[in-house]
Each structure stands twice: as structure tokens, then as C-alpha cells.
Image (cartoon, rainbow, N blue to C red; front, side, top):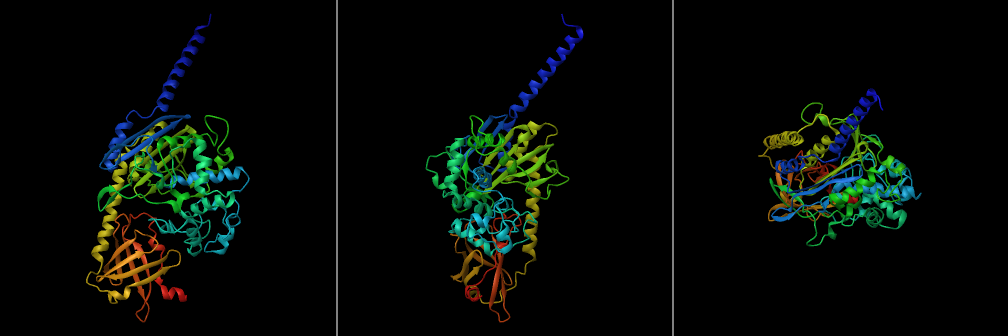
Length: 529
């Protein structure tokens, strides 16, 4: 017969086990208010459709869609609806390269020129020293988004043509000294796959990642969509009104951002990621654990730019860095491994917390970053416990502040310009064909007394040039999903045009509209030079 002391001990252990079991169940199940929270967030940020999924402890515990795939169409979003995942594609590209590292066909520190003959950057030293690892870590010396106008909006350039033009892009900083997010070098990294295997990046990702994981509906390109398929349409606010916009063709930027997937199939991607490359339901691996560690290890240090005070201060971590295809930071004492993705009409978010065996994905069909972030951190707070924040309210307040500041800047610029000034030249003198070293040709024509500007490799980039002040005009694009830009001409002493430069009008313009990196000279002068 047990002693009273032993009996008390048994009762205490049993009670603790029950408490632990309740806590485990609470942490496994999704937030009870998630449906209401998502619905409120969609309304706050004006998002037509959202899909959300959660993976916890090796299982899919939540996968659901909300709203509609397309404004004006009743077809609902569900867990199988495809969305453009944008730059979340980059982790797939890194994983594809990891499989080649496992096979001994490449190493992360192979010089790029050895694997991709003809590869060349502006600086010969960088051309010789850049490694595959450097391609994936945003530290090349290029400026933020430099060269993105070679594919955004859609252009006629091929991947090979875009990579060739890297040699004409002047660096913004020295090699490996600064972080600056780029897309072109991820495209370059993807092209190493056909150079090494003879199989295109597109086919390799399908065969080596999608098929083994059972991602049967995930696609590389929107050209695979057929009428009646379950996919979301892109939406954007055009002149202040939310509307459906055309799909952006990203085939020439594939390895940097062209994948379309659903939350149901992204969960399959999560399960193998959180299992460090091992298939969770059978023997075998997608990649070795050593490669998982490499991809989730800090490669490039980033500045901590979250505010120290204010509604978003809780997101300020102790470190920020970039791995191989993943952003790394911390929150509530846990390491976060994640990425976001944005393209015309879609923004998406992936968040993994390896220590909690937790993965969250939010896919949206509107360009509202705060909507997806609000939902992600509402879910993360539920699983990590501790202090909570009304993220929807906090991010809406932050958005309102940023939009007001941007409006004030734009208003001040408009009120300060010399509206009575005139161009230095007769309007027809600005017409001609101009050339930028990496983009190529742009044409200005005089049509019915109005200057019309085109970026010649970008079919949608047709703008009416409206005089702003002196020798600066505003490119008002006819496709209103493209950010307007100032076009400023510089003259030679004899009055001839020497060159023109560009700058986005709005301070909130996406960095991929990298007008500031362009330097156009008249074609004859460029040819002579």
C-alpha cells in the first residue's frame, strides 16, 4: 500500500500531466477567433480573397479560404485556390540548388563563372569572385531592385538576355559590404540548373520538388491556367479604386518569383522544410539536413529597421539576416524563418517557427501587405503565448501614417514646382530614340502635339509626357498599374540634349520600379560613345 506522501506525489504528477495536455491541445488548435479575425482584416484592408493554412507538429491543423477569387464573381476562395506566391519562389530555387549540392554537382561556394560560362558583372573582380552563395544572399553591391525593369512590368527580354545585361549595371556599393534586395541574381542562380543538368529550372523544380511533394496543382506559370480552374485573380487599387488587373507574365523572371500555389500545397512544402528535408510520410529526403541548416543560417546581416516605439514595436527583434532563400529574425524568444512575396495583384507570406514545429501561410489577391502580416502574427501570438497585439488595428494605423506622409510629400512637391516655367526647347526637340546601357531603347514621339514616351521592350509602358517644370516632364502611364515617373532632361552647352534620367513620383512606389537606375542618352550619341 503506497504512503500518503507517495499518493500526493502521484496526484500532483497527474494534475500536471492534465494541465500539460490542455496546454498542448490549446497550442495545436488554431485560434478560436480566426474566422472572425480574417473577415475583419479583409474588410479593413479591402482584400477580395484570402487563404490561410497552419501546420503544427507535423500535421495540417487548419486550411481554409475566405472571400472570392475575383471581384464581381461569386466563386469562393478555398484551400486549393492558386495564388501567385511571388518571391516565396526564391526558397524553391535555393532548395533546387541544395539538391545539386547533395549530388556533388555543385557547391555553394563555386564561382559562378565556372558554372555559368559568360557570366559577367560590371566589376571584373566581382565577376571572378561571385559564388553561387552570393547569388542568393542580396550582397552583390547592386542597388535595391536594380534592373527589375528588365522584367517588371512584363518585357520581351529572355532570361538569358536579362542575365547578359548584368554587366552594364553599375554597383551601388562594394561587393559583400551591404544588403540590397535583388531579383536578377536569383534568376541567374536558377539558370545554373540547366547549365549543370541540361534541364530547365522550370522542369527541374516540377520534377524534383513538386512531384515528390505531391504538389499536383502548383504551377510555374500563369500560362498553365485554363478557364474553370481554381485560381485567384490579381487586384490592385487603380486611381484609388480596387479592381481586377491583368495577370503579370513572369516567365522570364521564373526563379525569382513565378510560382503559383495554394495553401493546401504550400503545407506540403512546410512539412518537408520543418522536417529538415526529410519526407514526413515516407523514407527519403528532398535535401539533406546539412543543406537545411545552410539555408536557415545567417549569410547576410540586415539592419533592424522596426520601430523602437509605437504600435509595431513588438516586432522589433534582436537580429535580422538573410539565409539562402529565407529571411531570419526573432520574435518572443523564437527564431523566425520566413519570406514574403509580391507581384502585380498579389501579396503572400510564409512564416516558419522551427522550435515550435509551426508553419503559417497567408495568400491574398490584393496588394495589401498589412492584411497578410496581421493574420500571420495573430496566429503566431496564439501559439507562442504572452502579450498579444491587435495587429489589424496597429498595421492600419501605421499604413494611414505612411500614406499621409507620402501624400504630404507629393503635395509639397506639387505646390513647390514652378508651374509657369517652360521647357528650354521646342517640344518636338525632345522627340527621338534614346538608349540606356542595361535597359536598351526608349522612344519619345510627337503625336498630335503631345509627347508620348515608351520603354520599347515593355509593351505596357506607354506614357503621355506632361510638362512638370523647366526640363522635367511627368510620365503618366496609360496602364495605371505602372507607377508614374518624372523624366528630367539635361542639355549640353549648345542646347542639344545630353541625357535624361527618371525618378518615381510617389515615395510609396514599389522598389522594382527602379527608374532611378536608368540613364538614357540619344541613340546617335550612345552609338558614338
